[in-house]
Image (cartoon, rainbow, N blue to C red):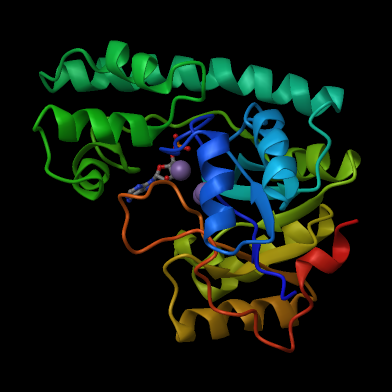
Length: 277
Ligand code: AMP
Ligand code: MN
Ligand code: MN
Ligand code: MN
């Protein structure tokens, strides 16, 4: 049977709309044979996803999407084949839950100053026990009619440089990569083109990423066109990185992104799944 890999998606453990069980079942329905659940800064959804994957007969790869800092900007590193029981990683995710809670308080204060009330209570409730993300704030701003779309919420309030933006003390890029690789995982740079780096900064980033032990780069992601795939593939070849494919699925409401709905990895790229055991 042909394998279909989707190595990047989110559940209710972070900012996804589906529970781990719903997500795995949907992936199965879409023909995905190998799925990595990669919630933001948490592994809390993995046990439930694994139980469901066994029942559905698909392979679950234990994953995470770690927020990291490099030169004052945030970069997302996907860990694939991680061990959620590895103590430094478990401690890191535990601490990141507090970091995110504290950031949410600060974001809420900034929104109060813009006369927007009730954000903190709303995002805590919406995230339940999971990670509080800016997506939760965006949904709150839409629900309260302050904006009409998630994108507008980021553009007007939540993105860097906007009134409710709060810089967050994520771990350094190198530290994040270490947490992944020390427990046997493969570190993959998520959605490399979304950072909008100039070519010289991209080169510096990929050099630092490789030096720290990073092995892969996302070449095919959810909403990416052929030109962007070529560009990301070019980075993979030039920096001798394996290529990953992942939808970055968050919700069935986004009609542009679906689990497993991905262009094939270009043939001359080494697939990242060959590095997973
Ligand atoms: P956080 O990790 O809490 O800073 O939130 C980051 C998440 O917000 C990302 O993973 C996306 O799901 C979402 N996000 C970031 N920027 C945008 C944007 N411009 N439009 C919609 N969602 C975004
Ligand atoms: Mn997200
Ligand atoms: Mn991301
Ligand atoms: Mn993601």
